[in-house]
Amino acid sequence: MGHGHSHSHRAGADDGVEINRGARLSLLGLLAAVGVATLVGLALLWPDGGAADDLQGSVGFAAEGVTFPEAVVDEVEPVCASAEVSPEEEQCGRIMATVDDGPDKGTEVAVEVPPQVTASGLGEGDRLELVRQPQEGGEASYSYFGTKRTGALWLLGIVFVVVVVAIARLRGVMALLGLGFASLVMFFFALPALLTGESAIPVALVAATAIMYVVLYTTHGFSVRTSTALAGTLAGLGITALAGWWAVRSTHLSGIAGEEGGFLTTFTPSISFPDLLTAAVIIAGLGVLNDVTITQSSAVWELRGASPTMSRTQIFTSGMRIGRDHIASTIYTIVFAYAGTALTLLLVLQLYDRPLVDLLGTEEIATEVVRSLVSSIGLVLAVPLTTAIAALTVPPARQEA
Image (cartoon, rainbow, N blue to C red; front, side, top):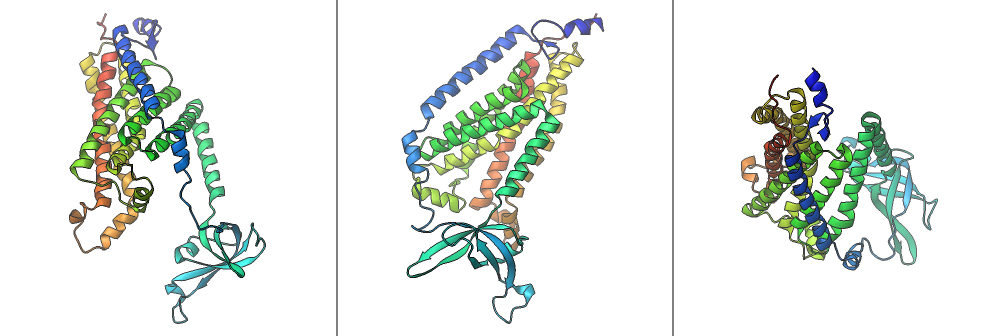
């Protein structure tokens, strides 16, 4: 016990474990080099502010004179498509609402809406966003644009922040700050750079690396343990980028699987959509990689602290037993997350009279399969890499007295 006590108070210790000086310098030197390369990448790929400003907001959303006033729901009235249609077979509905701003404020209007809107639970007092189209020599016409959800979304966001801070305390606050930094990187660097035609894969790698440097150190503190997790995360990002690049090209995916892609091809023809798909896979893997690598790094440190006589090989083997359990659970997380986002599409596929295997080659399904598999490959390989880096970084085994 006396040995364990003195061991936990040695100079240069990391959470009770003395760090090998050579391994620490090698690790920190490598991370410093990658950090400098990231800063250089940010400088080289930083978007042209003027070009980005010209593109952002350059596409007209509606015809001239069309406005989008808010309205308050007075009554939701089901309306049948014809007199012969029973209420159970209704195809449309109508909402009576009072315009709440604009030149017709206070006017009650009737707005036809799709059946799914009335089925969503709208009631008196809820707010809508309408489309107001002026008419020459007559009253303006109104149509339904969307349901105002801002209040509920703000409430949900506040509850999220309160729960995170209440349970995780300082770590939670730092995680939220890291999330804020990640948002700044995405909205002020990555998205404008992609819009202005910068190469998508380097932009995604530089953005992801910058985010991970700040997020990991902000949330988990400056330590060799965190640096080990960062090194494993960067290795996982590199593997994900290479696997994604190969998978997208070998499957000949266009990267255009929905209306949004078609829209972008019209207004931003300089974007390489296969590269954009690879970039999306890289960004999507950030959170899972962060989770796995910090867990593996912490596991190795705890193993060395609990058993200072274990060899590096034994520590790696024990750490990998933990890692395998984490891999299994995290792969479920990745696959089911993608399945959840594509649930509507999966239901539609059930209606077709072709086997699911034959439909895997469609752009929509193949895209989701590539995303899931590439993210999983990067995740799985990051576990042994992080575990090995951590096992090499902790001090060698001590001889038993």
